[in-house]
Image (tube, rainbow, N blue to C red; front, side):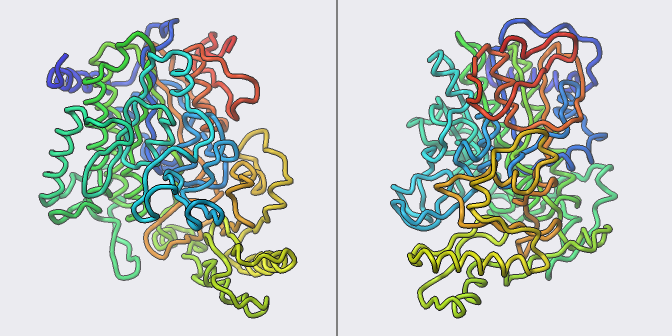
Length: 541
């Protein structure tokens, strides 16, 4: 089927598929021909539930499948790279090795800060080479391809780290956005025609001024401005000047580009129509950019959520048009917290921006004289995450005093909830049981790697934002950990399971559908029964 015919049929099907599903046939007993995993970056359960009555397209359809509203990125390091690495590996950061977006390695080929999705043996910190070298475990697509080389794996995302961590080490196609260029790859020397066409269209779109997006009626009550510093936000509609790529990315237009490319590759590569089951992973990154720039509760996020609903609907309708038996999952790499300025207006008086004195570099300067340290920078890292003592401090006793002094200083600050040393975390057992009841120590243990984690970790109190502008995530609190997990396949019986599950359960649940065995203890997740009736999609798996 041509691309134009596919899109025409997809448009027609969208209006039909947006209605709530009623009685359906039973899902096929055979494995699906295509597994699709969609991540919406920073799409928390809070966002999903808040706007749930207004979904009309893809998210409505997914809500008529298997719904797990209390999915958990159970670890403490709630960032893009670790979160995406859980979705298709079935493993937490302690096993994947992806403990954060960035960490410090003072012994590596380029001592200093390391990006999770780079090969620091090549390029520079500013002009890095995207790579999967830091991911220590295989993804679902890799495992399936190892069993059957005919399996095709494709990954499309707005961010390189999302595409790499969901796709893994052995992909047939990987495409992610690079500023100033468009969609680029690490694997394919010649771009498919669809990539070339869409890149040209997106460059033209960015070069032109961006008109305001429509404001849905249900978004009007939240379209109220809030002042952050000298800037007002919360009532905008993504207007932008010509050539402003940053604001284009922080708008629904960015997810539109990713969706167009995913739909085009489904058609061009005939995914799901080969001799074996194929795997497609898609990460929609715009929600994260919108959340960071504008927060999670204004008109901008409301418009963006409606756009995610449409984007997922367009993707599912294009899949329907192929006639392929597919199963689709939807989740997120992490959640997010709103602007503290708006939170204070809405009944959260403790919400605030972090004291700049908590920055490791700043605190290190304060502590150095008392420690007798006359060298360079003493502390590296984040004011809400891992902190490292300089490797230049080689005396063990002095390092121990520095760690104790820094930990004590952080603990005394009224904005700090807890400080855990590497020794405390390392000696703790891996957590078990429901992730919503884990202690801070257990959450950090799930994100700890002896080679990559810091000398200690700092957790700010709930509602304390470590950035000085906009909003962010990365905390161990449930507004950052809790994400929806949705599954849909034709014929599924709709059900909702409100109890806590983990994002690492997604991969084993897909694996069971294609009869891919996993050894006990090989991954951290477990298979979720996606059969809402008496059957068990995990039976015998």
